[in-house]
Image (tube, rainbow, N blue to C red; front, side):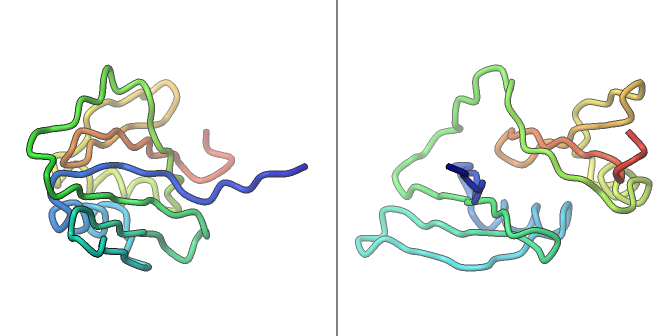
Length: 125
């Protein structure tokens, strides 16, 4: 029996702000959208052509406060084909929240506090 990873979900406070961040920071764009018939939630799947894995962003209409992310001891990792250009962009955006020069990686933080690990191209780790 095999399982294929399909998507990960992040709940967000402001869907448009998150979509703008993910497109600018990571080049992820909207693939499809589902709005609840009663308007209580909107789900947007984002991704790119480098992988069929998607990130699901969910905005709950009646959730008015920031999400409790605990100690942020979880993250989604993305491999950059141009690590130096990615780091320059993320530095300019002011979204780098942690760097580990020894491992050659860094993390960025999205508008809701989710951490995303940025890895160099394979063979450079």
